[in-house]
Image (tube, rainbow, N blue to C red; front, side, top):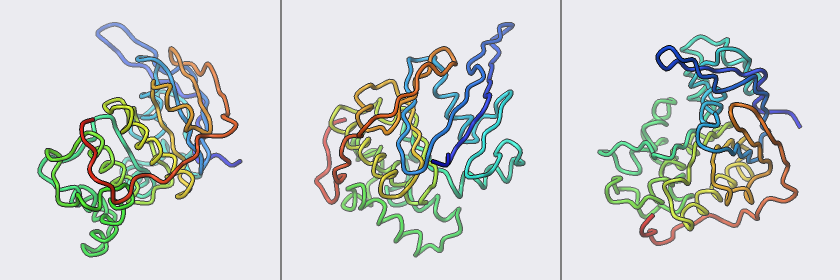
Length: 247
């Protein structure tokens, strides 16, 4: 299977005072389109640094990342930014929503940067929010949404671009079990129905059942690579359901 993302020899260090800490130690990594690849490890293992280097957000000290045929760290800053805008979706544990914008506006903003007309951006955003079960919450701001709903807005924002690469950094850590499972099924659906290569870093072992592949990392080194024989069935994610409470 051709890799959507292929990284070789990734190294990354950070300086703290006079101390140099090596976070990634010559890591090789690949992920395929249409699959959910979980990167699992304890806090401080290097998994968030790995996803940042793979997605073009953090330049490695050494190594190479080829995404969709592009050697992304050979691109200049402007072309790298454009590659992310056109091809990548991002989901973070802190949701990263704008407090003053409604759910609909959160999604339309990024689509307008891609060059869509205001009407097309609105229609596309509304459809994406409906897909994650928030068609009835289009005009709500983050303060009126539960944690699970906020994360689903973030997923809608990422999926509305129809990204070929979807990066998720601890997307369920701020959620309860029920909402965490809903979010994980949406990530799985992005791979199975939309054909994205989904790369999710987490320390939540409950998510392993939804992965096609689980890569373990510890102290900046890949320590395991297991293909899951049959990922959990991606039953339809919520659509037009009542708002979830709590989370």
